[in-house]
Image (cartoon, rainbow, N blue to C red; front, side, top):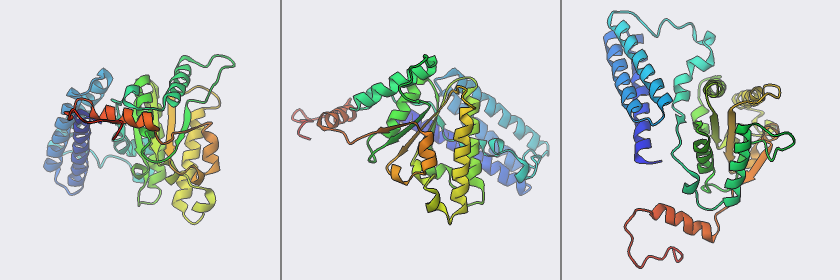
Length: 311
């Protein structure tokens, strides 16, 4: 991820922090302080919007910033805006945790050329995803490209493959790590999983959504290994329900699921069955290692006697 993308993430994080501060201040009775926090959140969102390349993202962020300013005005008039929400247990997870899920969304800058080696893997993914978007021709189904599990040693490029696939499809990319979905609060992790898929379905209404779950084995271990942990059982049950729900009884969906793991043997068999295609991402060979060095050395001053093959 380049400096521009990192700065965009920093702006999004700053906006979210201000929104949380606004909630805290309102709960403490400091409505003017909450209004100031929401105005600051709006400024961060507007700055982020100016840097977005996609028109749909710019519009979405400017609308969100405008909503925060309207809330700030209500707070300045002495009206509470967050306390209006119903009790926690009656709030749908898709609404309650949307801010947390929105943190995971990005437009991927990664292209296939940024990934060294893995030519056969890349070609298989490009071909299959292209067929998926065009509609499956009768009798032609090389793999279920909407459910792909990437497995192999750490650091071999599984995340880059998912990011490049997202870029090729022009998809909204949900870059999810297990830590994003884990919570110490009872039942909150399963609600976060439900909110993630609800948000992905919402994005797929007008485009394509690609949900990439890294370290998926941490979320869905064998049922027997999670026997003593009710939280893990709930997460597993929610994940299975969401994966089944996306299939929508055989109808096509524009939500694509890609997951990565270093330990496929630890994943619940029920989850493995939902991923019809399992792709090994091996360690790079000699040629691929040279290509990786060339990619990272591009545009950087190197001494004339540097030999990438020797390195």
